Image 1 (spheres, rainbow, N blue to C red):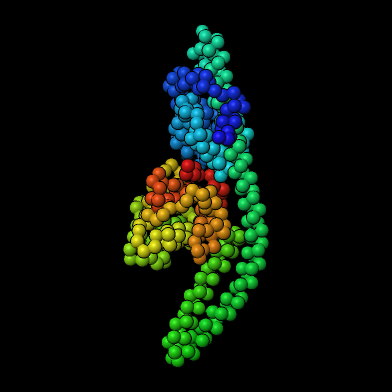
Image 2 (tube, rainbow, N blue to C red):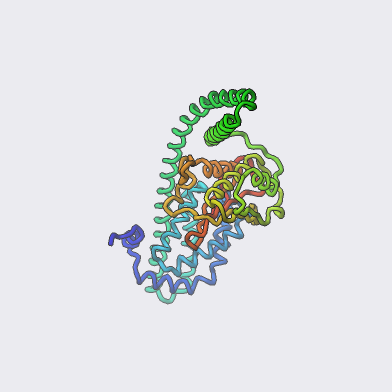
Length: 396
């Protein structure tokens, strides 16, 4: 069997079973200090203006992140250092791409941990210099592995993001010219239909029926053109008081669904008032609802659950449909990526674009049970500043 990347990295730094045993021994020494180390770690970040700005969600998120760091340290020293560990660590590198975290902060942060753990090693093993050296080497190897994994996934995702941006640039130029050109013939068709329906309404019901069908298709074509143009243009965001419960209800009333499909929500009325563009946020719900209803068919459930966390609102949108296969999840928010027979793949990219312009995020959150339906995790800041990049913690 071919050697995996993680196996190659471990071989490269010389990380083996003996190092694992020394790390487990260090874990028993260090675990009582994890909370203190987390305090030191984030105190250093908050002292530095650039690092503080890069921090996900700002200072309000530090309490949550301290707990996350303690879990990270526990896994670092306890293992098991297998492929599941590797995949878990890869997500951190991808997160850094999503929040545009400069990598020099990551290296500096890792050095803080290295110093704190080495101080513990010096204190605990000072009477056993041979063990001290071995534990130091094991710690150095695992921290080097952590950096290598993060840099690998950061580079991998950054290159993929750059390729997507290049495709989007070409896509935008094409759409901009075609979209505006299509508006004119569609407008002529609409005007002609209006005149024809007025003159033929009393002549033949079948003719009127077909004219109505043409009108419906013109509406669909106009919607596609609008979605295409929305993907490439930066319409100014309105900054108005927004009640998400009202936005949701407006979207639900606009989406037709079979009697066997149940649409519900929990917690929206309890959410605080946000600031944003209600029309664009309504489009977020519209696109998600339309996707879910199409995936369900004649029966099923769609549910939106809303909660608040320090600094942001969290929305879980889920349905009881077939879900999204693992093979396409990473491309789910790319323009023109679709699994629908009649779709063109603009709904979810537009959702992400709108949320990011509000300072929010969206991620697909797979369920543990296969075939249990689709689930999306959306987050919106409680106090957005202009049109920031997405800096809220995304789903893992």
